[in-house]
Every structure is written in structure tokens, then in C-alpha cells.
Image 1 (cartoon, rainbow, N blue to C red):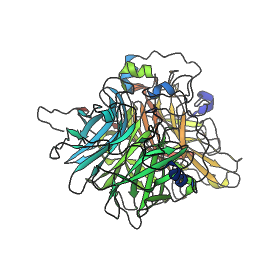
Image 2: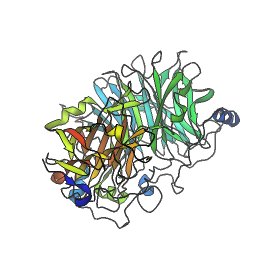
Image 3: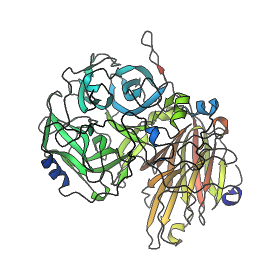
Image 4: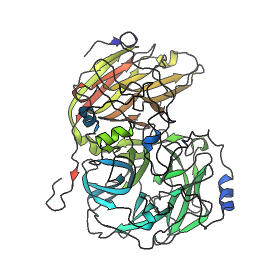
Length: 630
């Protein structure tokens, strides 16, 4: 084990970085007219009655246009980017680009992928559908890719499930959700972008329920089954949720939308999934100033485990999540669902959807859950886009991955958030392990954790703060919002350096920062700093992160899934999560290293770290014409 080296004297560990930019994805349509169904005046009256104050305006790139890859608005001199001063293009070698492909995160064999769609479990197989461009590594010609797995980790590619071939989805088969009916039927509701660029909701279903692979899907001939109601712009009506049953025996489904700057979740009733009624008052919930809600998700959680989407009763909370089109982040809140009036109320209005808690504080969007009846748990998928240049994606021939599936449970200890954790099946990939116990990391020092290559690993780390440091420390009021790791305090930052080379010319710190004000108030932050993650200038480098609850009887803990160009970080058992894309030029293959560091000014920490090398998963086409063995 290496002797600690002084960070400030030997290596400029972390450099200053500007404010993090926002993420962009293409606006899906530009149509602006409406069709009649409701009175706009009544809808607006419902929305604006008793709304909380709107958050600060979001900086929206005015240049977005239909059909253009999100990359166009993320890398370059426009808003939403954080690049180095030298914006010259970087010459990537084949070895660098090949290394970026992940070893155990799901991604297609080639081309562009975005939102996860309609995940479900059927006859021994987990099914993942995803938005996919079969022609290029940029957004466009969106179809539904399809893959199956028996363990959520090893995946087999199947033929495309649905393609844009009807007038009601001519310009794209967009996000949708599956509902499993009591009799065993499966219905899939999805958004279609019509030949006139109108967003409508369509119905599809398996051609053969006895087929475990669900290879063939039929589109309902009388689609669309839902069209934008009056008061809703034709480009602001998308992404139906999984349906749930109300006390009247009718199914409910939510569709995301907005009125002016107010994000809303519309609610429809149906008895047969072919005809729908927009319920009285129309809105499950709304939040002023949050803009368009897309990829809405709505599901119950309890203190005992995963619940079927239709479950409700004593001791049950409901999570409402929305992906905000304006800032390209996923937000959620916990509250109470009134199943009689079909309204949802947040437990804490100050932590409402879009102004409170993020599902993930990194590069993460369009998440979707499903109830896994096989193991009685709720599983969360999330889309992880690229943060390099579009030209680089075209050069390597692919773009985007999905996160490792996560279980979602209610946090019994805090009672105010959910906990996300990688599905247990990912642990089957663990191989060689290394354990470092009670490593003292003095203030301003770092320690090399000698595990060899560290580009495909699973890491568990716990940090113990020395003595009465929290009680005796007095410093000026400070609020650290993860803008830079060079903000040194008495009590942090401290954590792990991943994807670092030996000389620390490239590194990505994942760390805790304890901010203690003069009145004794303690705020804990969990962060990932990409400002020194690469030497390439055409890569978006930011500092991600957010607050994390740390209770009095808890040490600071994190788990990291490092898989080449992605780092998934879980703070305090998954209370705060950060997903990052990282593109080093030196710290690749056998040159990637792992360090524990402490950049506090007056605090020693003791770290215990366990690391596993991770095997790669088996991604390959399903042998439809021959025998198959998983």
C-alpha cells in the first residue's frame, strides 16, 4: 500500500470548473394547434388553483428542432455545455473508442438508443424495449428495439418489436408502458408521432401470448386511442404510464403534458383499453413553472417491499416522477394518492415534483419502473446518454446505454425518500476481490488501492470520521452544491478517485462533502467531479451531485459500479445516486487505477474498501433458428 502523498504539493488533484450545463434532447414535434375535447379555461383554472411558487426559470436552448440529435445542443459553444477552453476536435484512437464500450451495461450492438420502454416479465423472460435508430448513431427514425434476459444482466437481442409504419406513428414509435391484465393479457400503450407531427397514444398487443419471447406485436387498427385534449398543444401530449385499477374497477393511465409553464399529469379512465375518458378535473397533479412533463411514472411503495402498480391501502405511499423536458432531469416526490378523486398530494410541498428530489443527479433521463412479479420487487431502468461529441459517436458507431436495473424501495429510516440499489443479480459478475480495512487517510492525502486494472469494477466503501470532529469543528457558513472539489473545508471532500492514471493526469473523484455552518447545522453532499476526467477538449465535463441524508448512527458509505465509460454512484445505500459518462484518454484498459483520497483541511478519515473485478456480460442475438442455452 502506497504512502500517502500530499495532494496540494504533488498533484493539482482537482481544478476549478464552471457551473454545470443542462442536458438536451430533441423536441419531438413542432405542431402548435389543438383538437377539441375539453375546455381550456376549465383546465387552466384547475391547474392554477393553489399552486406553489414557481421555481427559477430554466434556461432552454431556443435552437432545438424536431428530429435533431440531442448532441447538437450539448457539445459545442452553445448553452448547456461545459467544455475546456480548447474546443478543437480531439483525435480519438481506435483503442480509446473501443475501450468506451461497456462490459456489463446494456446497449445495442450498434447505433442510437434512448428511453427504456414497457419493461415486463413474461413466461420466465424479462423483456426490455427501447427507443432505437436502426440506421445511425444519432437520434432519428425511432423504432422499438427488443431484448430478453432470464436474469436482468445477460441479454439477448431480438428483432425490432415495432417500427414507424402507420400514419399514427409515421414519425416515430416513442415511449410506452406495458400493463399486465389479470387474465394474462398484455397491453402496450405508446406515443406515436403521426404523419402530421401530432403526438397521440396508441395501443399494441402481442400476437401470440403463448410465445415467451413475444416476438410479434400487433397495432390496434383503430389507433389512436387518445388524442390531445383541448388546451394541450399537439406536441405536448406523450408517454403513457402503466395502468392501474381504481376502486370503481376501471383502469387509469397517466399521460404527461403542460399548460403554459405548468407541468401536468393528465388522467384517463378505461374499461377495455380501446376507449378512454378524461376524468373530471383531468389532472392527477401539476406543478407551476416546471414545464413539460414527459416519461411520467406513478407507482406505490411501502415499508415492506415492492408493490403491484394497482396496490393501495394503509401504509402505502405513491411516488410520482416526471422527466422535465426543459432541464432534462428526472424528478420525483413521495405523497398520497386519493383513489376516489384521482389526485395525488406530495407529503412536503417544498419537495414537489420538479423542485425537490432528483431520481439521479448525473447524466440520467427518461427512467421507467415496472413491477417484477417474479421476485415481487419494483425495478427501475434509466437512459444514460453520451456526453462526448456527436461526431465521435458516429465514428464509434453507437450512442447511449441503460443503467444497471435498480430496485426501488421506500426509505424506512428517513421516511422522506426512496432508495435505489443495483439488482442483486449483478453480483453474479463479481470475480477477484480485494479488501482494504481501516486505511487512515490524513487530511490532504491519498492512498493507492492496488487492485491492478480498475476499469470494470464494483466498489463498496465506508468512511469513519475521526473522534469528535463534527462536534468540535466551527467554520464559516458554507453551502457546497457540488460545483467543484477544490472547495476545501474542514470536513471534506473525501472519497474515491476512479478511472485515474498513475500520474493523476486524468481522474474522476466521487466524494462526500460535509458543510457545517456556524449555527451547527450539517448538510451532507454526494458528488462526482468530471472536470479532470479526460484530456479530450470535445467532451462535456461537469460536477454532478446533490444532498444526501446521513443519520446520526451512520458512517458515510458509497457503492460504485465502474464500467469503462460509465460510473454509477450510490450514496448512503442509494439515497442519492449519480450516473456519469467518463471518457479518459490515458486511464483506460490496464492503466486505470483506484485511489482513496481526503482533501479536507483538518480532518482524518478511516476508510474500509472492498473491490471486485467484474466479468463481462453475454450480449448476443437470440438464435431464433436453433437451440438456445443461457
